[in-house]
Amino acid sequence: MKFYIKQKVFTFKDQFNITDENQNLKYQIKGKFMSITNKLDLMDPSGNVILHANRKVFTFMPKYFIYDKNNQEIAVIQKKLALVPKFNLQIRYKDMTVSGSLFAHSFVIYENEQPVASIQKKYISWGDTYEIEILREEDVELFLFVVIVLDQVIHEKKHNNF
Image (cartoon, rainbow, N blue to C red; front, side, top):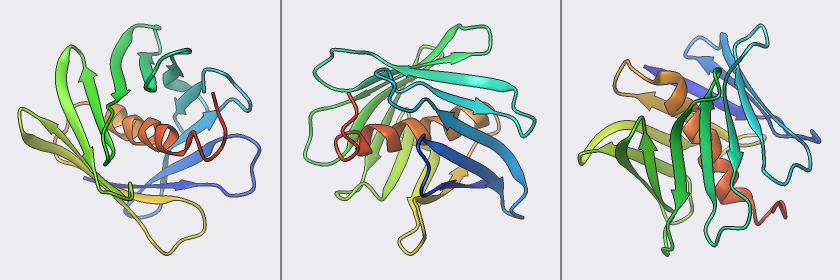
C-alpha cells in the first residue's frame, strides 16, 4: 500500500497532506507554530483528529510520544546517537527499529529484523515529498504518522525548534 506525503512550503506551521497513489487526500497533518513540544495532529480529510504527538522537553536526544484520540500512549520514538539517522520505535509495546540513509532521505522500519514500512524522500520536488510503502495492513495511520515525526526530528535543528 503506497502513500505520498507532501510538506507545504511557505507556511508558518508544519502542514502535510497524505494522499494515495491516485492523489486522493486521505489525511492531513497540522502542527502548532512555535510550540516547545512540537505538537502534531494527524487528521482525517474532515479535520477530525486521529492521532497526536508531542516532543518531550529537556531530553538529550529528541523523544516523541504518539497518542490515540482517547489520549492513550500508543508509540514512542527516540533518536539514537549515531552518525546516520537511527531511532528506537515502540508501537503498542513492540520494539521496532528505524534506520535511515546518511542524508536522511530514506528510512526502513523493522520489526524483528523484518521490514514493515519503507520511506523514500523524493529528490526533485517543491517542499519535502515522501513515498511511503506500508507492508502490512494494521497500524497504517500510525506508520504514516511516524514518518512525519521522523521528519520533524531530523529538521529540528534546521528550524531552530526546542
